[in-house]
Image (cartoon, rainbow, N blue to C red; front, side, top):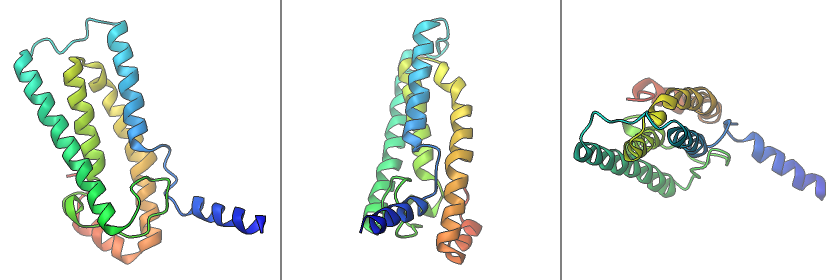
Length: 167
C-alpha cells in the first residue's frame, strides 16, 4: 500500500514542467533584492520623470499586469486545470489571452514588476529585470514548452506555429 502511494506521488512529480521556481517567486525575490539595493544605495532613482507621470505609468502597468494575470487564472479555472507550474496540467489552454501570446501571465507579472519599480522610484528593479527574464525564459518557459509538447503533441505544436511566445 505504501509503495502505491509513493509511486503515484512520483508520477505526479514527473507530470510537471519541472520549472526552477514559480515565476511569482522569481519576480518577488528579484523585487526584494532590488528594493534592498535601492535603500542601501540611494542615488539610483528615476529622478528625471515627473511624479505625476511616474504615478500614472505605475498605475497603468500594475492594472494591466494584474488584469492579464487575473484573466489567466479565470481561463485556467474555466478549463479545470491548475495554474501553479508544479502541479500536473490537465487541459491544454489556448483561449482568452492565450490566443495572442503563449505567456500572458509572465507578461502580466513583468508589467506588475515594472509598475512596482516605478512606485518605488528605483532603477534597481529595472537593472535586475533582464536577469529575471532570462530565468523565466530558460528556467520556466522552455521547460513548460517541452512538457506541453510531450503531453499534448500535435495540438501544442499547431498552437506554437500560430501564436507567438511573447508578443
